Length: 142
Image 1 (cartoon, one colour):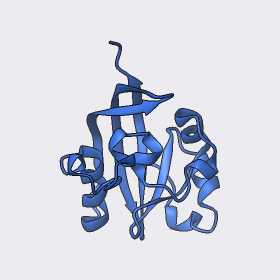
Image 2 (cartoon, helix red, strand yellow):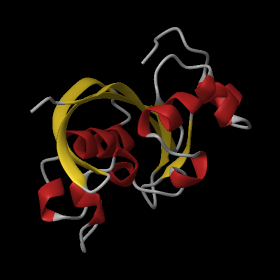
Image 3 (spheres, one colour):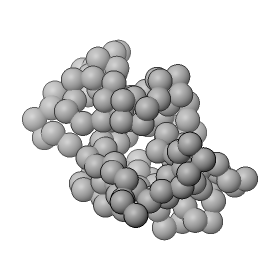
């Protein structure tokens, strides 16, 4: 996250404008239920989705993680227990501690094909929300 950013609290009335000014694709997530409240334009472009396809969805659904669409669902599936992104987000919500450069590989399903992606995120808590900044979201060549 950018340590020089202006306090989010000053922009809570218009979070979309605040998010759109950020350098990286960023999601604003609420605690309960743990869903994306909104995202910036860079996130929409990165994931190839409209804002309506992002808002109100769980993080793994936005990322298109294969485990986000199981019967148990995103964050609850047995395969989510050791998810570095989920664990960083939950830890940030519960402690207020930011996580920088959380690096992992997720199996992403797009166009009926599953491909591993190299992903790096950072998290930062602001009030009741957490920002998830996507630093890298890159398909791993096979």
